[in-house]
Image 1: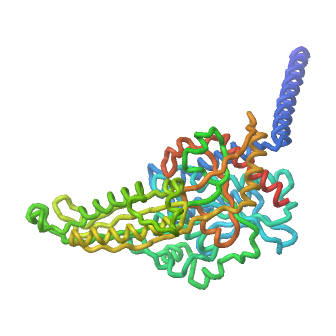
Image 2: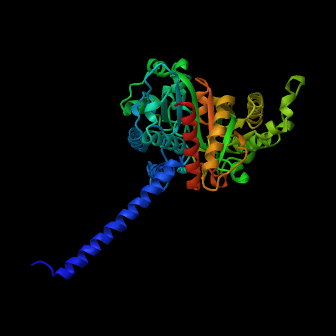
Image 3: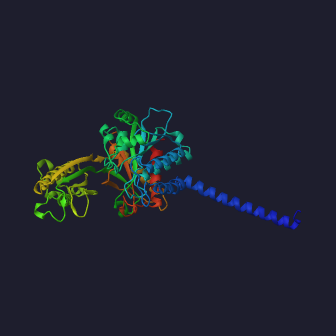
Length: 480
C-alpha cells in the first residue's frame, strides 16, 4: 500500500536534504583533496599510507615478540613480496636478482639514458625498529606513486630504479652489504662460501630460495657504471643531531669507514674448582682485558698511537672524536658455570671518519692483542670480517638534495625557512657499497632521541611526510 501524500512529501524532502548534504560532503572532500594535491603535499600517500606501510613491514618478523629479518629468511622473503606489490602499485616493473635484491624500475622512451638508483635495505638487526632501511624504500615508492597519480611518471627523462637490498646489516653472516655490494660489483665470489653459526653458507641460503648463484652470476649482476647517473638513499639519522637542532631533515656529507673483526682466544679448559689460579690459561680473563684495552684505545687514541710529521691529521680533534669501537657479541666454549672456558670469541666493530686513523687503530689493537695473549699464555687469532672505506657523498647530488629538502620544508605545515644542516654519518649504509659504482647522495631523517637498532626507534609521521616530500621535489627537478 502506498504511503499517504503527506508522508510521501516528507520522504521526498528528507531524501532531497540527504542528497544535498552528501553532495556538500563530497564537494568538501574533493576540494580538500584537490587542495592537498594542488599544493604538492599529497599527505594521504606521502604520510598516511607511508606510515601505514612502515607499520605493516614492522610486523613481518622471523620471531614472535620482536622484529628480526635476516638475509633471505622466511620473513625477509615475505617482506620482499609485499614490497614488490607496492612497487607495482607505484607503476614500476619488478624483478628479483640472484642475490635476492628486489628491483622496481620506471623506464623512459630512451633506454640508453643513465638511470637514477634509489635504495635501502629490507633486512634488520635483532630486536629492531620499524624505520631503519624500510623508510628509504617506502619514501621512494611513495614519491613515485605520487608521480604516477599526477601523470609525471610517464614523462621521465631518465629511468628511475628503486632497489630493496637483501642484506645490509650482516647479522646472519657477519658480512655487511651482501646485496648492494653485488649490484656495485665489489662482492667477491668467496662471499658465497661464508657460513653462519650453524655452518650454512650464503650459497646454501640462496639455493634454498631457488637462486643458483655462482661467481659468474655475481659478475653478471654488476651494473655498468655508464648506465647509472647516481644513487641516493633516504635513511633515519640514527643519531641525535637533527633532533637537537629541531629539524626534520639533513643532508649527509660523508660516511665513516668501518672495520669488523672476529677475535678468538684459546686457552686451557679445566675444572673450576681444582686448577690453581696461577696455573690457569683462562681465555675469558684474557678476553676481558682485551675488551677493556679496546675501550681505552678508542677513548684516548692519542695515548696509544705514535705520530710522525706525515700523520699530523691524526691530531684533529673532530677526527679523533669520530672514532668509536664496540664489542657487540661474545661467546665461550663450553659455557658452563663450573668450567674454565677453553675458547672465547668476540666481535669488534670499529669506525672512524678518517681511513688512515682507522687502519692505524686496527694495527695498534692487533699488536697489543698479541702482547696480552703472550703474557697470559693463551693463543689468539684476529680475523678481519668486513672493511669499508669512508665515503664522501657527491657534492653536486648533496647540493640538489639540500635544495629539495629546503623546498619541501618550506611547503610543509608550519613551513621551515633556513639552512638545511649537513651531517656526517657514523653508521654504515648501502651508499658505501654503491659508491664503488657511482656518485652517491644521502638524506637523513630525524629520529626520536637518536635511538636506532632498537624497538624504541621512532620517526614522527610528519617527518616521514617531509622525507617523501623532499624526495618528490628532487625527482621532479632532476628526472622529468
